[in-house]
Image 1 (cartoon, rainbow, N blue to C red):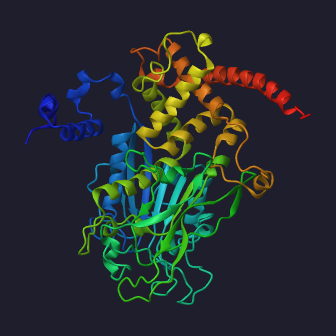
Image 2: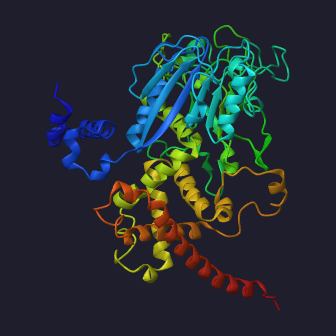
Image 3: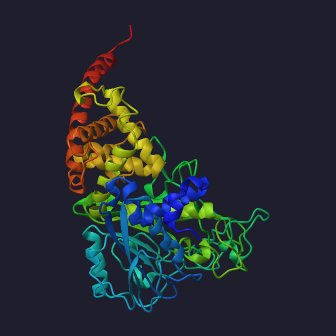
Length: 540
């Protein structure tokens, strides 16, 4: 078998698919022999994200049915598609089964949140709970709350009934975003988080030759459930957690999940106050129960829908973001690759769609610190590799003051389009809005279609459901000017840029945004005066 170096040197002899696979491997491994063939910034230090994943009870990290080995490949895929190194610590409340995955840097058994690690060292924490027994201690809950309040992101899930309540059921905010052991009605025929009642959350999708899912292992076959996804803004974009490249899914929406005969459920939307700000939770997807499902001898299910993914954007108040899922069956091997069953799991294409959901969670909920580092890389990559300026200007070296607003706008719009095709449309929009948050938080809030609306916000939005003015042009013009500022920088605009120069990219870019914003607003004000005159018109 040829070595990676031999394959690289003979790349012209490989077919296209083999070349693509080789390129992906090179991006992950970055072997020494590649140095002379790539830009030197390929070897600059990547941003680091420290991840902690905790399980308990019968869940673990092996290749068995209730293992998380398939899910763990998410972080390998993230490393291959971003300028980020993921350092993953795996922990179990009792005995851990080790993972050979190279992203894993530590394994911890008998884990305690207050003594086994310093939680504040991590950028994101994932909790997969199955144990319904004795709750974790007050000290452990306090350690988790301190971590979240300091900006750390948290993901938490369990399964039906009280599964997962021991680890997650008393965590501040998390306990109010999902039913851990408190569904309103415990009667079997009305309890949606029961195992066998008619009202259970049975999401098993029927196979093409059947109108119902009548065996338990429908959860392990190649037919995932379809989910309903909430869309935001006039562009009707999904939440960044459920967005995907249109080249993979033409709708740009992650609209499938692994299925299961009895899922848990997220609670209705509520509002948490932190740092003086009232921030509502958001239900971003719903799952559907197919009427008549028996899924292996259970009662025939009544059709209904239920909240399956909930989020809280604590970053708006400098706290951590939270993601809640109805069940860890969306993540474990038996539902992904059929391990432990007679089925073969999701197709490669469908697994790729679901894995993008995992990747989006890891990206969205992470602490702000690595995000800022990654922002620099994204801007640098767009500037160097996307021909934003060459594709928008007849004269690529034209002085910024001579560039028309239309051309600056074109650069910004192309940046969003390019990023949307590389990562996903919702990420692209949120990235541009985040850049505006750094410069003008008030305008950014107007542009942020995902910012949760309080009751006060809703009361003030009487009348037309859409904004009267399209602020996108101000956003794109500002972003376009930011890239021109990079072009004009004596270091960042040349091939001689160094890793130290990268640290200044935000400062340079923001100064450019300031120019673009001011000239755009000046032009808007001139046009607005004419509009005001037109609106004074009275018919004769």
